Each structure stands twice: as C-alpha cells, then as structure tokens.
Length: 147
Image 1 (cartoon, one colour):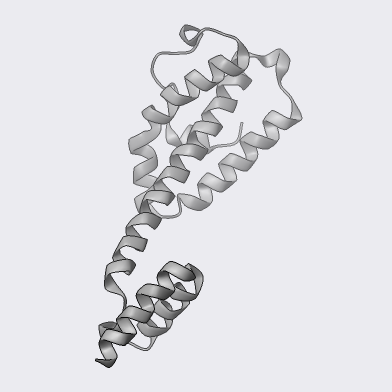
Image 2 (tube, rainbow, N blue to C red; image 1 turned 90 degrees about the vertical axis):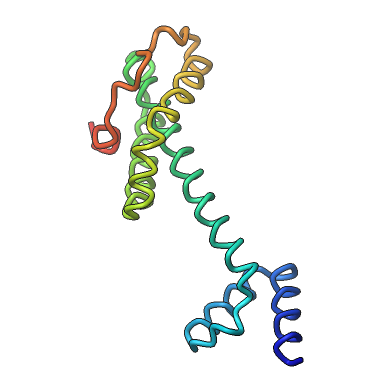
C-alpha cells in the first residue's frame, strides 16, 4: 500500500512540478532505491530529452548552414551580426557534439539540415534555391571549423 501511495504521489508530482519530480528521481537513484522510481514517467522523460537534444542539433546545424550560405553567396552583405551568429552556433554545436550520440546524429542529419538551410537562405537572400549547390558542400568538420 505504501509503495502504491509513493507511486501515485510521484506520478502526481511529475504532472505538477517536473523539476521537483526530477530532483526526487535523482535522489532515489543516488540512494539506489530503484524500486521506488517512477519508471513509466522516467522512461518517457528520458526519451523526450533525447528527441529534444536531437532537434536542437538539427536546428542549430540548420541555422549555422543558413549563415554560411549567406556568407558565401552574398559577400557584399557580410556583417558582424552574421559572423556573431556563425561563431555562436558553432560554439553551441561543439558543446552539444561532445556527446558521441549527438555527433553521430549531426552527421546523419547534415543533408537534411542543408536542405532546410537552402530554403531558408533563399528566402532571406532573395536568391533562387538553385543558386545554391544541390548537395551539401560542407562536411560536419568544415561546418564546425572557424573560417
């Protein structure tokens, strides 16, 4: 009965205050009280975190590629703002890609990010999508390396 009450209260905590729930999950795990973990929600939460991290990699990679395309195809428009965005996105991506899983993911979605970047760069520059290379001309390493 006590285990049932604990499970119910943890499930309710998950719905009411995710941060407090996470702290409780961390405490229970640190104390090796695995049988008391809210496994259903914990599994869901961890899967959601993984998807969120992968979406962030794709988003930042796309943003970086947009600015690299604009930088290359509109040199007369180059600005400190573009340079700052490139540096910022590179730094953020490098931090994310310290995870081997996310590094592999970045390599897997590079072409998808490039396709999205071409569409966005075309909208922002007024150039036709055909003005950009049809396939990604960058490697992940070159995208992450300073000019």
